[in-house]
Image (cartoon, rainbow, N blue to C red; front, top):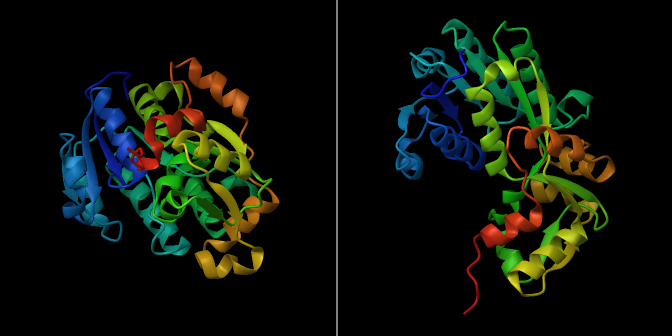
Length: 293
């Protein structure tokens, strides 16, 4: 796959945070983007970016192959909504479709520490998908981001933040590594534009790291109103997030992400992709919370 612009690239998960950021960055790099979604009605916002919307489903192999017709590359995100086993099934099916259609380069979005036998279902599922990609014979790059900064703007957190409380299952002193999806999107675009520089690479992505108490302090400073940190106790983990996600929060409390933040910043500075700090993210987004009059 030549290092040129104007490539035709498939983006899955484009109506979500990361997929949307990847599509936007790829467009800025001058590529033609086809997004695959099972519900085109939800793709209205992304369609306004001048992308091609393809109605597709990970459960329909022939449909997936049609989504890949005439394309040079693909950015794959595996949907987690149906559980970790289904995530593996869907990921393998898409990789097989890419192989059959002879896609030039595939970028797969995994997660930091997926390769470390964490016992976290949604980490293990991504590692199994990684393994399938490695054995596929495709030209590939695996990205392993940490916690998305944008998660704090989601409905699980933002309403309580607006009321002055940040509640999570992590200990107050637990350091959380974070990255902005905008930065990941730029990295996806860089990789698919210049794939020969990234063939076979497995790349951790981290932009900042703060304790949960410090995160609440930063939010307080930017929003100009007090936000205190509230730790949801271990006994309420499964009730709060369900059995599939509870192991992740237990693992985050006991171990946590371990990307090398200094190496990550250094390597992406070479590609003129400065990674966003949490303070910069907050100052730019305010978590989508309007400033008080």
